Image: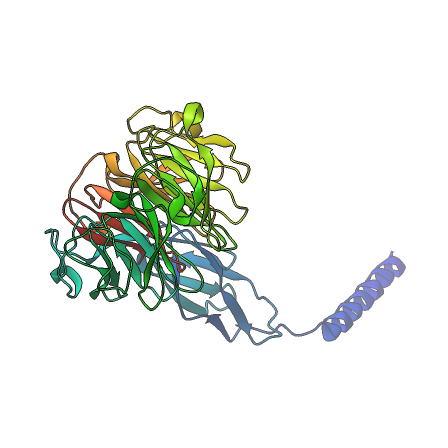
Amino acid sequence: MKKWMRRIAAAAIALAAMTASCDDDAPALVGVAGVTLQPASLELVEGADSALVVAVLPADATDKTVEWSSSDSAVVAVANGKVSALKAGGPVTITATARDGGFAATCAVTVVLPPGLKVSTLAGSGMPGHVDAAGTAARFADPQGIVADATGKVYVGESAWLRAVSPSGAVTTVAGGGSGGYADGAAPAARFTDVAGLALDAAGNLYAADYGNYCVRKISPSGAVTTLAGNGAAGFAEGSGTNARMGAVAGVALSPSGEILYATDLTNGCVWKVVIATGMTTVLAGAGEVGLSGPRGICCDAAGNLYVTEYFGHRVCKIAPSGAISAVAGSGTNGFRDATGASAMFSYPVNVVIDASGNLLVADSGNHCIRRITPSGEVSALAGLPRQKGYLDGPAGSARFESISGMTVAPDGIIYVLERSKPRLRRIAFE
C-alpha cells in the first residue's frame, strides 16, 4: 500500500513540474492601451453608406474586439464599422469601444438631404413688355422660342425680338424691332413675327422658327439675319430656300452633324427637312392622311431620331430618319396621368428636349408642369404642381407655372422654362 502511495505522490510531483514548465513557455497577455477612429467627423447624404477605420493600440494587443454603438440609430445605424445614413439629422455620435479596458473613440456623423431640384426665376417681371434690364426688372413680350449655349447664355424668341439672357439674368436685345414684320438684314433692322422656336449650331448660328412669317430664319454670330427656308407667305410646297412654302413653323432642331435642320409645321401637320448648305426643303414626315396633330416642339437624338410633341394630339411621337412615325407616350386624349407609354396623358404639350441621361423632358402647358419620359416610356411629373397654375419658386414638386410656352436644357443640365401670359424665364436646377 505504501509502495502505491509513493508512486502516486511521484506522479503528482512530475505533473506539477510539467505544468510549471508549460506556464513558463506561454506568451504574456498584452492589454489594450487605446483606440482611434477615423474620420473624426463625417457628412453623408441620406441613403449613403460609409466605412469607418478603427485601430486598437498597441498593434499587438491580445484582444482587439471592438463594440459599436450609435447615439441615434434612427438617423445613423452602425454595424462592424459601416455607418448607414437613414434620414437627415445629427450630428450622431458613433462610438467604437474596446472590450479590453473599455477604451473608446468617436465619430460625429451628420446626415443631409440629397440635392433637390429647385425652381427659381432668372428674369422677367411677369408683366408683358420689352425692357432690357437685370433679373425681374426685365420684361418679355410673348416669349416662346428658347435655347441655351455652353456658357450659360439663354436666347429667347419673342413676338418681334430675339433676346439674350446672361447666367446672372441680365437681358439684352440681339435682333429685331418693336414693330414686327418680315425683313432680313443687320440685327436692328431685321424683323420677326412670333419666334416660336430656336436652335443653335456649333458655330454660334441661331435658327429661328418665325411662326408668323411661315419661314425659318438664320441669325449669324454677328447679328446678320437671313431667310433659310420659306418667304413670308403661307403655303405648302417643297423647294429650295425661299421657293419653299411653309405653314406656321413652330419648332426647329438640328441633326447631330448640324447639316440638316428639321422644322415642325403646326398648320400643315408635318415636319420639314432643310439642307442648310442649299436650303433645299422637303417633307420628312406627316402631311396628308398621315399628318401629325399639331406638331410643335421638336428635338433630335444622337442617332438622328426626332421627337415631336403633338399639341392637339396630346402626345409625344418619334420620327425615324426614314420618316416613319411611332408613338412614345400619351393616349391622345387631353388630361393628366403619370403612367407608361400610351397609358399616360398630356395636355397641349408645347416642347420636348433630351437630357444627358436620355430622358425626354416635355413642357406640358395645359397641365402647367414639366414631365419626364424615361427611355422605357415611364412618364412622371418633374417640376411644377400638375394642373395647378400659378407662380411659385421653390422645390420642384411644389413649384407652380402658368402658360408654359417654351423649354430647353443647357449643356450643363440646367432646365430653362418660358412662361407666356405672365412672361418670365424660370430656371430648374439641383441645389
